[in-house]
Length: 257
Ligand SMILES: C[S@@+](CC[C@H](N)C(=O)[O-])C[C@H]1O[C@@H](n2cnc3c(N)ncnc32)[C@H](O)[C@@H]1O
Image (cartoon, rainbow, N blue to C red; front, side, top):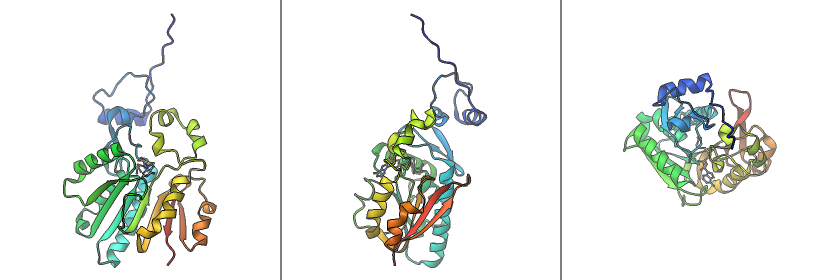
């Protein structure tokens, strides 16, 4: 039988740099299309390096901008509130967002409490490992397994941040094979219009928000104002902003007063 040989993978300059930094064998010969981050088990995010595996999404550069938006809201609230600020991340994956925020505000830990949740127990195991590695054991982060807000009880928060799956289901098949064939679809697929989980979150978040709370979301570029129309009609304020590629990518919402 004649076997067709797969061509060896040609790594891009970015991938070569990543392998040179983190791989035991930077010149590896392979046919896999997996992201280099899964080959090395390491991903760069903000100014640090996280452990990743195939149970979590590799944190994206756009999400660093979401961290910056939330960080500036935390700074503002820290200067005006005397009570502890409570921050919830829904869908934490590798822990990237919460760990980045906790790192930025290391000198203010006595005034902050973070909660990070995910539906995936294996993601939470990794997120906890990353938090311990980056921040030590005294870090003020509580990890909770939960389908959106289901297991959060009656706690209330000043800030809710979520980078939930937001890709419309039909687009998954068209994604680059490194994403489509290797990253967890449960971290990508946001339902028919990509907005299913975001709608479920916004429909249920009000009871856990403190007065003057803010909700920060990473969204798909197709999620224009009309997707939020029902919430705006019910008195929510909405601000959409773009990422570095000039695509609509973030939503900030505040509940009706
Ligand atoms: C796009 S990934 C984001 C991961 C990480 N926060 C980041 O920015 O890199 C979405 C995450 O949401 C989680 N997720 C999916 N459905 C969920 C649900 N119903 N409740 C809570 N988390 C969910 C996935 O397991 C995944 O870790």
